[in-house]
Image (tube, protein in one colour):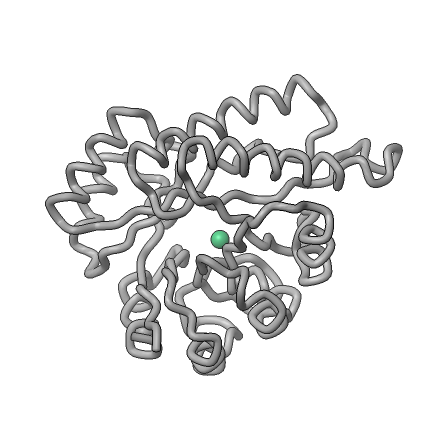
Length: 260
Ligand SMILES: [Mn+2]
């Protein structure tokens, strides 16, 4: 039987400096760290080399969360898309240097002009996802697309959206299942059932079913015991990253007690 590895995201420290954050990483009782490549923590080669060194001495493995602020892979503007792709490609090349085991990115969103071009944002979303997949292949980086939360105008929030996505793209792109996000449309179990062979990475955080609060594990309405049982049933043996922004050490220990 496989056992998942519990890790932590740097998301809860995004308002602190990068250097302070990585110093604290090593005290968090986990070996798997997800670096959010955005805000104060935007990666560059120097930072990645520092992380690599830290990883070697502490036995850490890394994943990278792609930049997501102001990023829309379904953008109808070719010049904006070009700039965004440049930024995303940089992140993928850094994932290669860091030897990150997965690079997680968000699907695209509808815009203020989507209503005039029905279906165009969906086509662009799939096209960019395919392009990112081929760029990542060149750099030998595995990538995964994340289910994103209601009520934002994202194109891929539900199981139906992901089914359609896999019909429309012909590449073997994995899913980063975000449990908190799936709680907002009540589809955690549906995702685990429909895509047990596609899920390569998991984000764990909680909410009360209305807002994407990123609460500590057990502080919302997610039924973690049930999820633990489902993950055991599908023999999930990849990483589960705590993406809560509070009660982080407690969330890590709770998940370890349930799953490891
Ligand atoms: Mn997430």
